[in-house]
Amino acid sequence: MNKLRILAVSDSETDHVELGRILARLQWRVDRAYSRAQAIHMMRRTPVGVIVCDRDLPDGSWKDILNESAIERNPPCVIVTTKISNDAGLWSEVLHLGGYEVLAKPFDPHEVFHSISMGWRHWQQAELPLKGEHAVAAAA
Image (cartoon, one colour):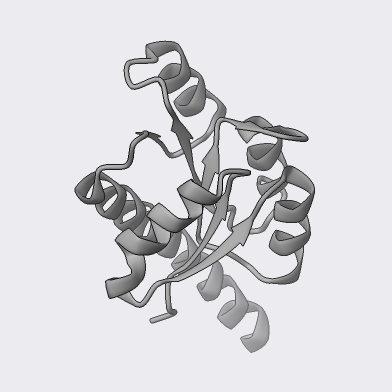
């Protein structure tokens, strides 16, 4: 099984520190990006299973990250974070456009763990049929 790799995208150092603190004991690798451009660069270098992205970025938004990640063969699960805890419109938009989940800030450790764990499982399950395609192509 691959080690869980998370890309956290936020211009808030506080968000990065808090996510790192919550996830540290799980030995999950959390890479930090502070902008849309930096996140896209990092996604292109190394595949990622889960992206935790702030709703608003200094050079774009979660939608830019979702659109850029969609070109991957097995796109990562994009979890959007927001300070607005009851934003039903955001929930609806995220799910409608193909995002995975919305997390409210301040982060609840149990919600963060659950959302990322389920996103990772979803991403891995989508990856399994893709790996089977490689085996069929190699055998042909």
